[in-house]
Length: 188
Image 1 (cartoon, helix red, strand yellow):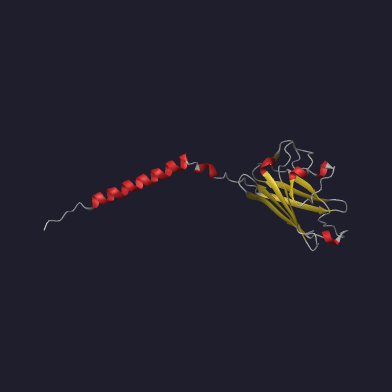
Image 2: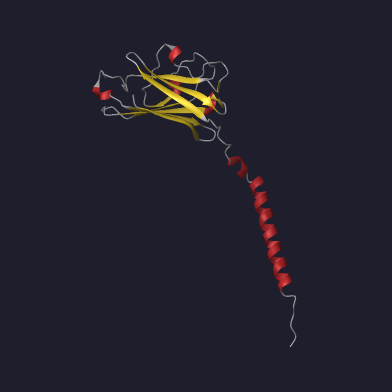
């Protein structure tokens, strides 16, 4: 009987041709179907922040200071604030959005707050600083500062026990990448 020694070559050639066509089709579809547009840019690396919460007798001030890492444009930041505790009116949650873009002294108002309205929108803009300088960039040594209204009362002797709060959580999110870049929990 006669044996053929070349049977493997046509099969391997066919498999290689199919593999090349599949790889080319996948590569071309990524560019033509726009799959690359859905890929998020990486979040900035805010390596270190420090937080401070002062529940004073007349105002409750929150400060988050950028210590080290990448700079972040203010318009790419959202801040989630959660207050919880034994009070009947708690928990409360608000989100600071569409942050002011003109720098120092810009007042937080209704357009910047989503969710529960427990952030102070008073006339004292010195307490409502998003970025201390006119650069509109949250960078090393810059502080984000805002005031919690007594709707979530963290003072030693709350005036209304329905608002008595014991935990404040502040989360800063980089919106283009939907990533948490800073998170602090305060228990005054």
